[in-house]
Length: 430
Image 1: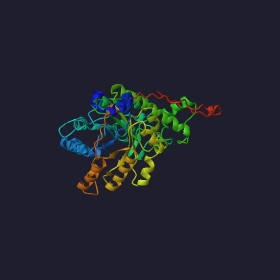
Image 2 (image 1 turned 45 degrees about the vertical axis):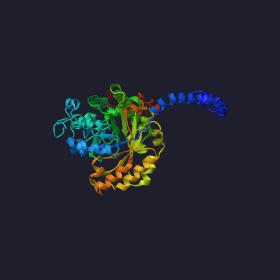
Image 3 (image 1 turned 135 degrees about the vertical axis):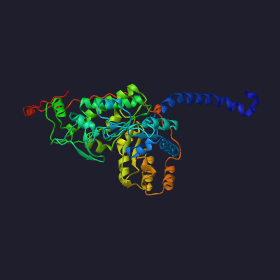
Image 4 (image 1 turned 45 degrees about the horizontal axis):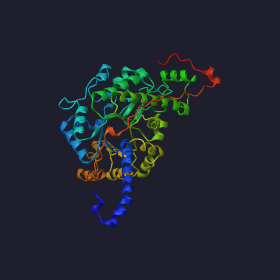
């Protein structure tokens, strides 16, 4: 273009502003070059997930039911599925690791003999949904499981020697998260899933922890005594004793993260704990530190509260804001249980609240979304269609990779006055 085709009265103005326009264009190009990679690394992914539990096993066994479920989730603009793969001391897939340990007397398979996890992953990926296997029971197992019966030395206990506790899953015992053989077994199972299947990650929930009253087994007492030169406090809520145990679990999760990323660098290391104050004080699960140490790639905090005010008080906490600024963060919402259905109005109000705070959501659990409900299927589905009106793409490529590394701080120095009161313990750490 030349200025000859432009009226003379405009030529002077153009000569004046053209250099300015070129300068602006140059600046915009430079900024775009620098900002686009940075924006691509930002963790602004909206989690729209659902857990598939052992209650959903009838669906997982049937390939057609899996296809229908995945199709329905896709149509409703979900983007992530969390299928259970570790429950009650057993894995939900053919596992040479478990069978080699003598704790898997049977193998879960579909009606056609298919590997249910492999089938779910294949069908979900064809629809563009992520699949992140869910390590549900963590360090928890029933006392009657082969795992507990074959490895009694792997279990931890209270001060009075008792080992069982009551939870949602009934009576359970707890694997000692500080014991090297326990850590080795958990790592082997996790790496088996990570390498055997083209899943998009692995998730650990509120049971990758330990109730605060536990940790008085001979192994842990000896380890603590060796490191601190004093016996564990009788007050199981003693801050130093809580921190020592919580840091040991954090150190293990750091190593587990590194092991997973070594074999699959883009695997999403997902965590789904309870709200922080409860998780740390009651279950020694310092998940905020996991976020700060880059152990977690995504966070879904379970907030199963029927009261909306209580629900909101948990999702607008400072630790939630901090996590959301670093990684994809969501809220676990109760969609119903077999004997306790949840009204769609309650679910809707909680989804809206979470979205107003910029948080994603994941529902517990699939069957309760629209099968175990007080409303009709049509009405329930019509409400779910309003939750995610547009599709939101999720991919592990958008999540920054990280190499976690954590060494627990040294324990407090012992009081020399108390050295003479140290108990004699013949059980030494491995």
